[in-house]
Image (cartoon, rainbow, N blue to C red; front, side):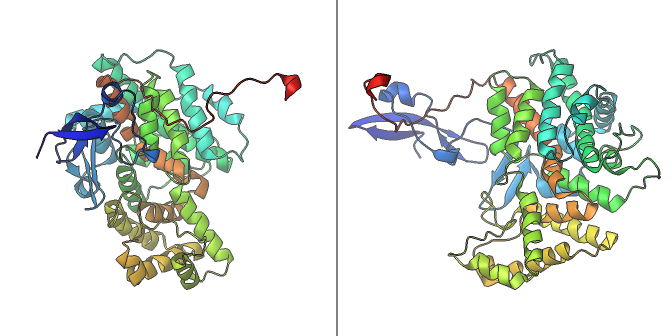
Amino acid sequence: MSDKATLEVNGQKHEFPLITGTENEIAIDIKTLRATTGGVITIDPGYKNTGSCESAITFLDGEKGILRYRGYAIEDLAEKASFLEVAFLLIFGELPDAEELEKFHSDIKAQSLVDDDIRKIIDAFPKSAHPMGVLSSLTSALTAFNPSSVNVDSEEDMYNSVVKILGKFPVLVAWTLRKKHGLPLDYGDNSLGYVENVLKMMFHKPNEEYIQNQIVVDALDKLLILHADHEQNCSTSTVRIVGSSHAGLFASLSAGISALWGPLHGGANQAVLEMLEAIKEDGGDTKKYMAKAKDKEDPFRLMGFGHRVYKNFDPRAKIIKGSADEVLEDLGIEDSILDIAKGLEQEALNDDYFVKRKLYPNVDFYSGIIYRAMGIPTEMFTVMFALGRLPGWIAQWREMRLNKEPIGRPRQLYVGETHRTFVNLKKR
């Protein structure tokens, strides 16, 4: 195969190099396209065919249902690693040994205190404020309390910034939930593991002892791992493009949170529960809604089934389905919404229409079920997604800065009016 691609424009041929990735993906390098063709650009709405960077963090093959972090299969990581091990892997490139992991966790705990003035900011929000808006604002506010910029050429500076945000972010997540529930803000318990501490900060009530449920802890640990990174999605690309202006880590993360908020991205698991609520309000007939989903003339969309990237079964869904079953069985929750969810799942897995089109339940479907069973309100689902995605965003920001990538500046194809003569106000 040739190592170049040929493009013919206006009768002139131009050659561009082909780049092959380590998984044999092929890309056409068009960095010189405008210069060599006299201003010609490509147009690719949604960037579905455009690679914005070279990255060594996550490999995803949607056709084969493959997801790997730094070369490790997501199935192995979810079964054998902890969330903090995966965070270390994503950010620094290798799995930590026991000593590195202990130091990593210790350093994160040492940075877990949030300036008490942040309380004043969260107090200013009404209880009705959406948790994602609150979380984005609080993350951005951290910049004011940590004004020094990160020296990306200093490994020590970079490491300190990483452990600082990994320490403080779970506190902001918990405070966002506690604000919603009218509970006093909690700074956590450094004697606990990372995920155990998150749960205690969220749910501990001041007038009773908090008891950990290991099945819930394990399920949340898996969920966070499964959401930790997913290649160049909307929020990750946002973090990278904001960071490419040399905006700080906290500001870039805040932008990523805002991008994640949308229902077509991180808000999908919230959309699943809202759909289930609507089905319940309409009598709970799952067969009726499965028929509506198959009717091309019906505007109803079955949320939580199929995936834009995965053309087969979402590998993360296969993993988390088992956790969902364990959590529901252990907690013994009687909930008509969850019953509807299980009904839709069984019908989709056994319906030829869905099976032939590979419209299987995805990770958003199962994560919504688990979060609801845990007692996490629907509006908080995307906040939990952000907690899981945090190490991936950090890794992507760090990689972008270390690679000294240029500032992101997409082109456009102008389709507006051509030159017009200005008409004086009195003559219009």
